[in-house]
Length: 457
Image (tube, rainbow, N blue to C red; front, side, top):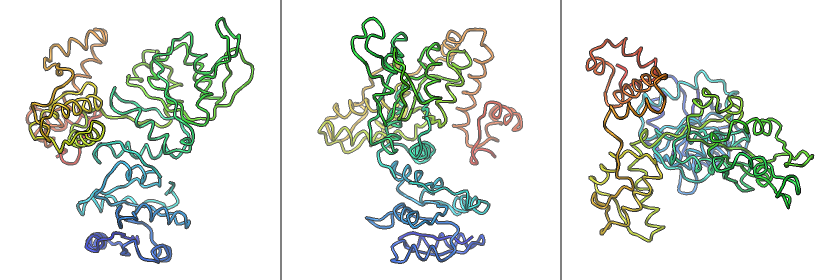
């Protein structure tokens, strides 16, 4: 392949070129600021672009790619960046960039990502287009979410966001809305858990005057009030099963009638839903319709809990300190190491929302410009129970003894998942457990637990 390497630093260009030439690729080296850069790319028979995010203070690699698109040049892109902000990652996704190399990267990481494009047909590459806003997290834990936010922003397909309370589901919904064609109108958030079943149709679709006792005036429902905006159905899993067929028909036909009305009204907006319950379990229990789930989740975004992304706590803490300084008129400069260790050791039942509250309270309690361990006060003093017997007893009470096999599988999966996170490779873990590597791999495969390259030996 012929690969254009575009970076404002000459040493980066040459080092990347050297690696790629060793595996048989031709390269074109550019700073991205040449007056004829688009012409050079167009006339050089380039198959792939490797582009840095920051080409100058006022011109980015993403700006360059947008210029290429406007010129009708559609090429696959690998983005290099030391600045993996939510904005540039989501924006990259919106213009079709799926592969991002975080600087500094190794020769093997570069070769592995380039290797994919040797076999890729360039007709399969879709380039599309812009975004702003902030969703805080590290590159490794959040890159898939950023990508899906970008993809969802370019179309009107239904999106379902799954995640525990406090993980940022509504923020994701707002990000998708603000960066989509629906952003010209508002996003209307509806908490489905608070709508009484007997009022659901009236609230959702509206009603005509005199359609029932007490209907003294015509009422415009959510589906009509949202106009060409986004209807965000929060707590969608709480809708009563008896009402779900009405919602399904609405989604299938994209039309509705007000209660007591005869006129079909066209829905012009977009649907995003969210839930913190295990919706697949509800489908199994016949409390949520499977066909409705598939209709709502054409695009599915799963948000990890804070327990699953503990490495993000320092990033989130610094972010919330900056917000607290601005909103509370403070001047906190940082956080001590022992205070950070305390934050990292905490189990946050309320996830990011609980961490934010802890940071704000700690900032207010700080007597200096540094948050110290003694300044940190958690709202809920109770930590997660370390008593295994109590945890198992709770599971049995929640699920019932008839689901003993499911309970055991859940406990076993969590056990091996925690061991994998603590152990550096499979060989060591199998030795600690006193079982063969093949037996251990079968157990891990049974639970869908994958080992990364660093612990698979």
